[in-house]
Length: 205
Image (cartoon, rainbow, N blue to C red):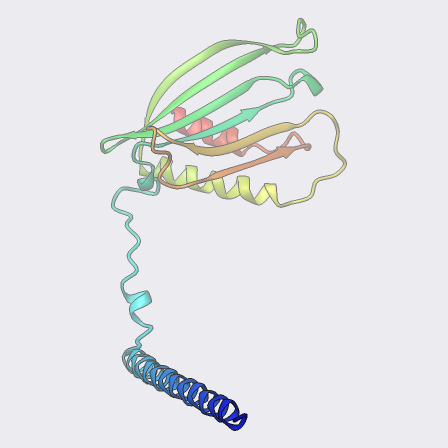
């Protein structure tokens, strides 16, 4: 009578083995089919690949001038001098923005009171003027950003506690944020970097 349980076990194991083999064969056939579809898709992509469109369709729009992407944003150029030594000095800003097709520059100048700083320099606004700038002026702004960035990557020595500070950044004109990010800053220990002053004088005239 003991032969029947053994026979039953053999039949059960054979059944499970056959079922597993069938499932494995089915899974292999499915993978083979998917691989064939993927292979066909890749071959079609390779056959139709044309890298030239990546360059032929690139269009740099200069119709709105060198600062065309400002739109509702404002480019703020800031300078701080060293009239008060390590306590800083006068501060100036060139705030450049667009209203429709007109590019404007708001110039601000805060004068530092070096005699009565008491560890914190006091400032008085002595100039606030608005100027219309043209495409030539916009190109000068781009050149200034180039010079500012170039100086930021150069080593300067010797250094001291007193130095000129210069920065540029784009700020948003709405709650969404600026259309693009731009920010750069540097210091001048030589006191001879005059690029901001040259740009300021050009945009104000």
